[in-house]
Image 1 (cartoon, rainbow, N blue to C red):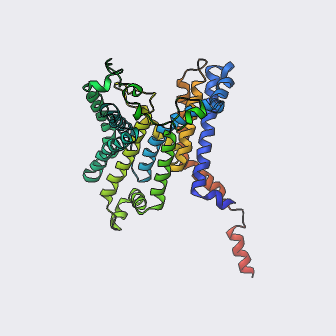
Image 2: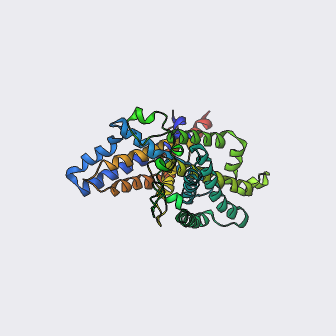
Image 3: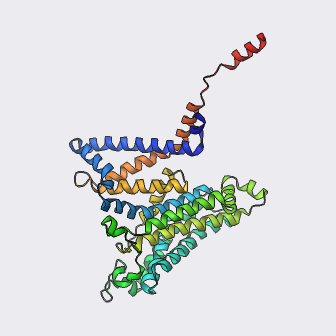
Length: 372
């Protein structure tokens, strides 16, 4: 039994559960500090709202789908030894390509998704090229391209009247046209999930995201390409010595990572219930992928559950109003992620606890051997 708990995957799971428990306890303490009379009411709403009805569960799935894709994006880069902090820009670029395909060119939803993948991949490949050929830290270049991507998209959209024609004649200045009016065929199919759950939000996006999570797991765990990508992440010099093309794999890793984030942008904005707004603010969904990846220890399958959990808390946080400000749920999620950052220390502590020897000390064994 002790050997089972020493396994890396089991230790990662335990450390994540400990981080969640610690973060929730800290959140409960904060609720008591803000409003002691309503603390248990708010905590109960946060923990139970997501499963009180199929409609709320549908909203959890709706929110989790793009969150899962950005989490996969960040986690994939982590697995290959890179830190893709540019998921927000790649998410934005993917959304832009998808919406242009949907509104400007009247393409169906699946073609728009392919365009989003291409847009995110392009925006992810550029920091990868800088890293591979010029040794520019991917964190610096990815941060820069977050803002470059945002302003390129905003500038381009502001000069495309068709994209902002809300009702095919009514021009808006700050958001893209509603897909239901512009091109209903570009909206993600609901596949009967809306009727089943009684929610207009839910669509096939969560199914697509889960399929991609499984695909990423297969690539990383079962293919030669995945092995080479991880090998370059663990030790670039040793990989080159073994004959692996490290530069190619760095670019490939960032390209795939960007493609995943771009797909997340299309899932979010092709839902039909959200419009892209021309604001000078980076998309938070891209940054939220970082805590999802951390909580899931960057494992593609574990990321599914961490995305669902973060989404579940966000839906529960909405139910805490008006007794508590909406931002309180962000603090609680931040506390959980802060604790998950200590996951490695927790794993070492648990491993040390499990490897304590209760056998006869070595000195005693030597004495017995001398007597014999």
